[in-house]
Length: 163
Image (cartoon, rainbow, N blue to C red):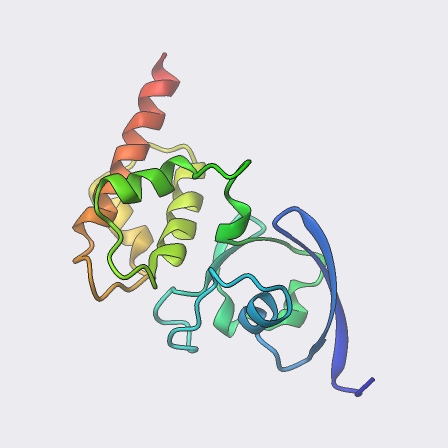
């Protein structure tokens, strides 16, 4: 084994993973190339577009600028890890219902960002949604339908809590 390789052990989508990675390798490349998790998109590679967004220990992270070796002992979720028994999550359904999906390249990153925001269980304003989603870029939708989808699920969640 080359000296610039290191064993990384972490949990990805609920599964224990152990991979030898180059110490310079991004988490994005480990997830896509070694684990086949292609929802994690390679966009800008400088942490600006959000297409590579994953959830690490409950926080959204741009995996293109996060080294794979930093994932040691972490709990990582990708879009593939959100579904349960082949069913879409409510935010994924809302993206479809609200027309928040165009070409789909940015969608996984937006869904991951929305997931973290919704998991906080707070009542959200449209401005708060926009602010949280600002780290994700889309060239197709104009953002309103994305905000509508997140707002819809947030309102549903708040109504369910009131019951």
